[in-house]
Length: 274
Length: 177
Image (tube, rainbow over all chains, first blue to last red; front, side, top):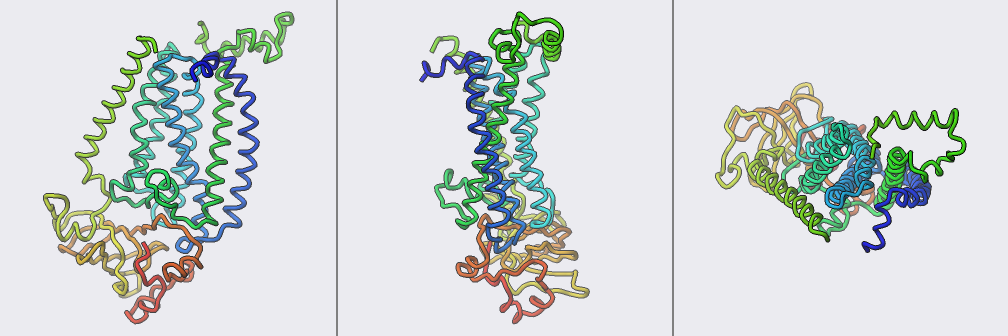
């Protein structure tokens, strides 16, 4: 496995792999988003208790689930960045954090507008909601810590440590509804994995939900890969392979194109002085 | 794995284990305070191994199921009283003046926040509805649980729950939490 993985420590190998993978995530992802929304919002039956209002589940559950999933991915990248000190893993943290933060925000926001009509309140400080809010702060903390240092790699190291330590919050989020009594109900789908119980949702609602979960994963994975490629390119802009990818050749580095190149270098603020 | 990486791996995992251990201890120490609400049994019989009972006058939340047939409306119809139960036999009477959430019905899980005015009476300032983790179409719910689906807009508690005979015929008779 190591022999197979090793080439990807090189940014350009990862870049080339990502370029190939992005369409395979993005196109099925977008198609499945449409399929799951139309299926879930228009064709799935209403709920016996909540009527039509439950349909926000097709956004709420996938975003909450992948907010946690991407955090675990970010923490794994953090371990790789700290232990093997692979630059691409550091950039992966930077690529994942904002996507995860947005997912967490979506889950909190849709949860609030679901809670208002059903529970009677936008927000309650129960264990599940509070733990999810902490997840948002962890994401924001990782993003802030990453850029808080003069030396980018020092920032990456600090962000990795926070990402790894914060992973403790993930089981707390999941099990909060079992360990303590909360206003939030217990888990419907993931309990199939964590508690080996059948999902407590009728099949005609479960299927669109599973499709929406897959769709959210694919779209967000495509976004992460695109962000990762951008970060790789930004840091490798002076390398021949990057210039070649951008269609800049050394023969024509006069006038406009070299100007663009310098602009990009300025934006990253000298952090590329390897 | 070379020794330097091994050292860093050990460092990283010990940070994680240490932080997890510390968090675990904190959560264990706080475990009773993280609960959002008391159950009726906990208010009547005391909570935890020391059986600490909340005091009269204390501000707290109580969560349980609305006892079927216990919903009473007074005056303008905004004043409502009902009993909450969990595993039984302890029941807490909740008095509330205000608009109940759409999901409020007999047998439903409810969290009420307010002041304990007597050992088993709560003057609520806020009533929130809980719902369970089960989702199913109305037809299936009727077949499985005998719950007829009533859209929130068509629910009329004054008619359904003013007297007990009507409540028995009314929708949502069973404990459907």
